[in-house]
Amino acid sequence: MPFTLDATTVLDGGLSNQLAAAGHDLSDGLWSARLLRDDPDAILAAHRAYYEAGADIATTASYQASELGFGDEAPELLRLSVRLARQASFQADVDDRRLWVAASVGPYGAVLADGSEYRGRYGLSVRELVDFHWPRLDALASAAPDVLALETIPDIDEAEALLTIIAGSGVPAWLSYSISGSTTRAGQPLTEAFALVRDVPEILAVGINCCDPLDAAAAVPLAAAVTGKPVVVYPNSGEGWDPVAHSWDGRPTFSASAVPGWIADGARLVGGCCQLGPADIAAISRETLASPA
Image (tube, one colour):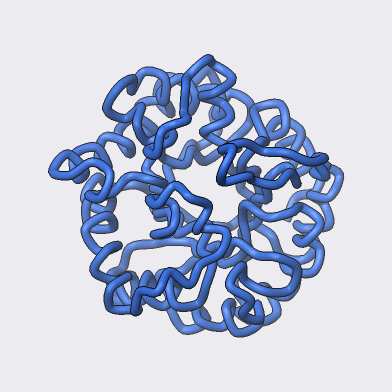
């Protein structure tokens, strides 16, 4: 059955915080992707926890995986990330919900492990970004996920590169930007950023992720109005990432009580990102059941 957005669908939460809560050290540059090679059972357990908390979609551990980090191992580890999420869907103790797998395609800045995904503007051309992303997308698509998650994209140049690869491929995907207020992290207007996907049929949904939850109130209806497409929204806890200390700090601002408003404004994919765990996804799931699209 092909992936569709006929109703509100619940995404999972932050993979890294779930793995850290289970006692895994994610302090090296490969972050959670390291466990694809070193402890795949840990990733399997994290996916299963989110499915059982109410997520309809598990997002693979491929966000930070690339040839830059894994060398020749990268294609097989990318495909493994999809297989692990699929296996977790078979193992999860859930009702008769249909469970899906989204293959994560994180930004170029993620592989630098220096917080660049929260800045963008890497000094690379669109063509160079296409060359970086193409092997990752090819490997992930070959593993047959239900949908690709082009996520935490900080600027329009990188979005253009990803859309160059996706357009005409027939592979369904969503595109979500990392934002600050009314702009991308690189400072470009969200109206311009969202408009890029308007005529790309492979993009089923557009929106935001890994941003302050308070920014979603304006961004969700804007994405719907600009594109006419369903909206995807999965903010982080509202804390800030310190790339030097490799830690989150500040006060959480996330509340699942915001979910009905997002749904009313056009959100059809709703979940959490960094620092939001299974309990938060369970709360989001309850809100979506009370606020059907």
